[in-house]
Length: 483
Image (tube, rainbow, N blue to C red):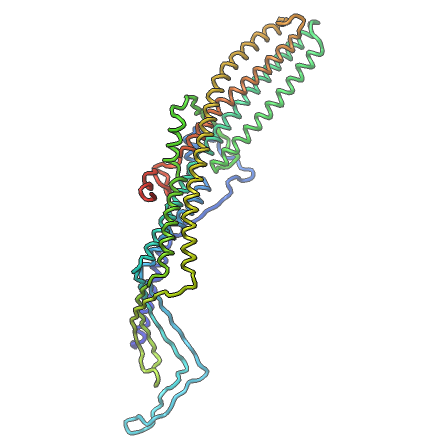
């Protein structure tokens, strides 16, 4: 085997190992996307409590998957910057075929005979291997790595923020299903009462003590109650489809939900809730990380006019020796120092932009804090209002139930509380008041549950968990980094 073949084989092995190393470190994440809701699907019924619903959503959420991909991208950017410390290795090869070569005959033989000496070789090939090593004498690469790491922190905190919002969406959708189902119960009771009144009115007419007008009026009440029931049942179907959509499961899935509402009053003040929000909300920590990344950008811009140093080694092989190129192999080592002298003001412009980025990041943080404070206040006051309404509606519904009971007794006896009044009109008014009181009770009950979830989300209580990777498990993991 010739020396050239040996060298070429070694170069090929080196390049093969480098290529294998590059492909083995690249992470390829398979993505399998299918229709969530398929036409004509008949999924199995599913029984859920609210914690199970949250776990399904965390497992299936597309928004969380997008946030995880953003973390992966930010992590790749950190690796890219860290690779700036490492040497690079480049291999190149060329092959040239000329239409003809050229040679000269010279009397170089042992007995003075002519020997053909190639001057231009028709088939020419060359190979080179170059190694480059940057020397971070001014910390440019390190500063770039630091800035990229803060961007990764911000991406991970965005995952936590997405998780916080997702859990709130699940709970709101869950409670909306329960609210809609409670509306159906109210509508069913109203229909049952209207049908009882129709039967009683018809019996009075048959006995000759009632009027045709009362029968028609009661039949109209039944028809209206039937329409209200159909509307309530349709709202249940829509609410279940909305919950299934949040859970990212087939929207045709029948659901049976456990009523997990808790009407116990909150035991913290507004100031305590706001303090928790400032401490726990990932958006606050995300703003701090963005500020630190912007500050690293200032340091990077400040160093653009500083010297840089690079080391390189190049080895080449030219197996086609000729009279004017007798060397078949060669190598060279180079140390290059670059000192920027004048860059047309580009570095000053970048410094100005970097300082503006820091100021913008600080303003964004203040806006974030202001928005969180308003969100917590709205959620806190809304919850307090719902708790107060729940107390009032409970008493009002008890009164409405008693009024309807008394009106029903008088209606069946054919008398009214007001002399000369209409028993049917009296019981109809009592039924309307009862339905409104029941509806108010349902709304207040589920407003409390919804508003509690909204306040918990405003305080960031859903953002962190031991299973929240690729986000953070708790806010203390990043507080020391971003401050």
